[in-house]
Length: 262
Image (tube, rainbow, N blue to C red; front, side, top):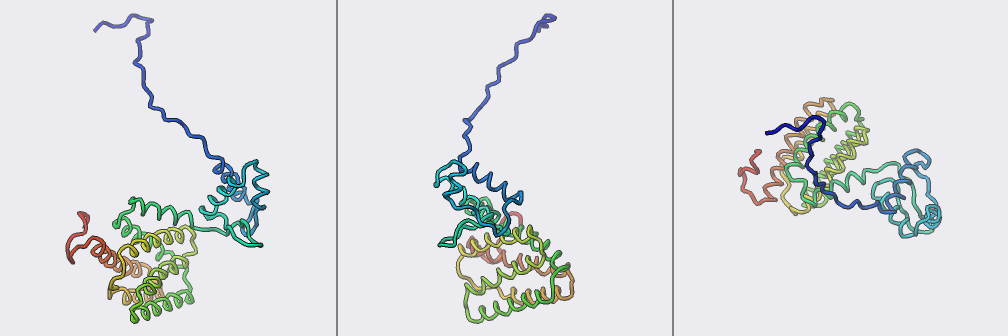
């Protein structure tokens, strides 16, 4: 190979760049971003009513349809609530987990969240919730959990599948709210929304006999402020519950492996 002469540049191969057209942001997204920034800076506070749609459209120099799309985007994000009627309008919310819940639901329907993902997430999030809740939960809140379990038992006895499922799922949200942590509450709400969709897809089923006794043991651990015992109880219950879900969903026989991970 002959070396190049001093002072002479070696020709470099031309790089072919794969470039896709860059789509400009749609107008309603820019309007929504500006309104979101105003809310995040505290210039609009929870409970405040935004100016009427017509005024906002004139202020931003856009059509009413564009403004309507921007407001709808903010509503889906959980930042505002759109109310109908003479006293209606767009109102800033205290705070909502709608964006988290909607995002998780979309992932589930797109097939990005598998039943195994759901099991892992429920166990991990429930453990975090219990460890925090056990330090903050009040006796009145535990009484509320006991009332929930009693209501679920009555629904179970009457054969009301929809009611008992709703009570069992509400138990997890009551427990999450006892953490006083909006991040854990939103995470639990998102996971429970996926659980609701999963159970709905499976359809009515015989509720496992271990659930109610497990809840009662969990309540005793909470009253004793024994977080690790409560976590162990919840983890065991969720593993059994989701094993049953997967058997129903995939038509497996009892004892047949659900996946290679088991």
